[in-house]
Image 1: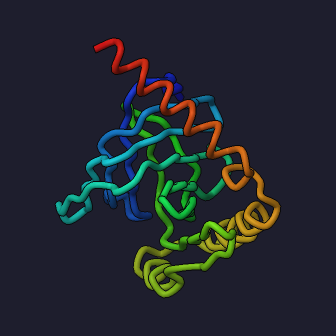
Image 2: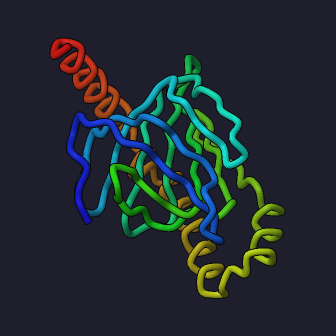
Length: 182
């Protein structure tokens, strides 16, 4: 697997278990890329849904993906604090200038006070039947929901107090460097 380079712009592609595209984020700046971790940032980026509808993200976001965990975390920087949207998903791969993963429906929304809500359980059960999620995937996802909740409670990874500051500063620095190059 190739590794995205800091400062370059890539896409993010979300798929469903049946292989169909779910959603594409047009532009995300690479802040860190290793064989296991991808951290990126975007703001006001075009998102295309599977049905062709498009929309723009509203606020700056820091995106965290890991090649060994079955979730990814979007940290949305809003005026009243950081909101986290956590997707239960396959580990990511980097292919053809895009981060790619399978979205498994279950989501956890985390609020600035670190309270959280598990979302889309009905959608998960429906898609599990329709697309035939194997039992092993079901077990992995449920284990990773617990792991993610543990991270939230322990303020690990993207939930750590300094994570947002460090990566927001890196994003602003890279944006400034790119504007000087133009």
